[in-house]
Image (tube, rainbow, N blue to C red; front, side):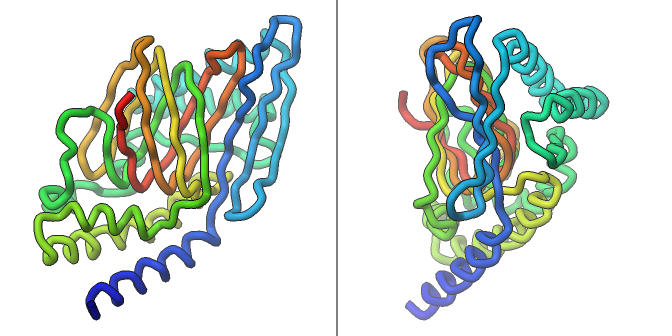
Amino acid sequence: MRKKVIIISALISALIILSGLSTTICAVDIEKIQQNEAIKVEVNQYLGGTPNTIISELDYEEAQIIREILISLNTAIENNDEAAISQYEKILNDKGIFGEKYQEFLSYDAYNEKMDFAKYSRYTKFLEDRNGDNISNQLCYFNAIGQGILLTSITLRLWEAIVRAAENASSPLAGIIILLALLPFLALVVVLTNLIPFRILMAQGALTLRNGTISSLGLLGSKKVTVGPEGIDVNFSWFTGITINIPFTENSFLFVSGFALDVKETDV
């Protein structure tokens, strides 16, 4: 019991520190859009309270251009093409959809270098492998693009995700080892938020995606799945990054890129 109290106290302390250092971008509007109508892109900066909202109105042609740029950007991120990433992020920032602050994007190689996963590879055997799906991961760089809808919530607490990882361990000792291994990553979240001008800590999110791709790079390795019309549902917790939804039709175009403490594929 004493050990549990110590663990919970440490987790709550980490939550207090991290909760004051976060923001996000979420562009959401799932109305049916005609080509002659303006498309509203809603940008939300989450600071743990009421989000600061930025709304941009684009014509259909401009929204299509942004969609194509996002597709190219996602490919560049997956291919670790730093030059292309810089090019596309500049174009998007010049469009003004991110407000006054410059939004940056990371390649997988850059993220891997920052997190140095090789140093923690010996701890992965204690984590739940979640055999049977290709996306579930922990402490990962998470990207998704395709036709989808994103739902968010701020009701999840940070310690719940970490405790869940510890509970998946094979023994109490392994749980403590996992906790000690994960705490340095919590500190790295603060560093990562400094790399992303719109800093967030989205407590909980869920997305449904069709006709696109989802990928993650984290403690459980590099994972990617191509999604068809049948769709896929994914839950993620304590996400730091950017989401953009472009509502062309009822099948909104969704782009997600950022850091997640936990990503879990669910049954469709």
